[in-house]
Amino acid sequence: FAGIRPDELQRLDWSAVDIARGLVTISEATSKVRRRRIVPLAPRAVELVRPAYKSSGPIWPGTTITLRRRRRALARRFVEATN
Image 1 (cartoon, rainbow, N blue to C red):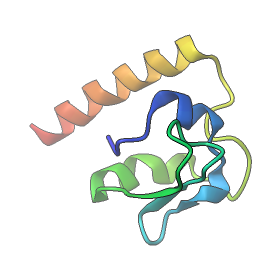
Image 2: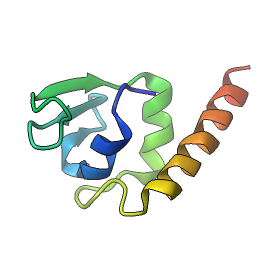
Image 3: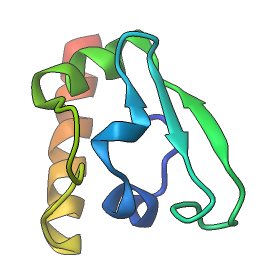
Image 4: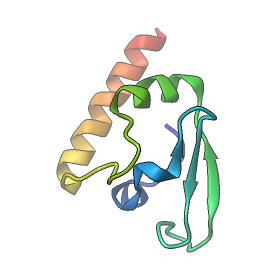
């Protein structure tokens, strides 16, 4: 929901997430285009991320297939919550 690519998400660490400010910093090493960028999170995205938030460690330690399934499930929940 924030414009973070799935491949970037798999390489991203919780230390890059500033939950209080609603920002995610994508480093050059993590980014597909090898440029640092700061991604703002919508308030609803912060609400969805907050329960899983940790101060460090990988954001997604699972497999690519499991990530795809989770993203689809979250998208369904997001749509249901906004209707």
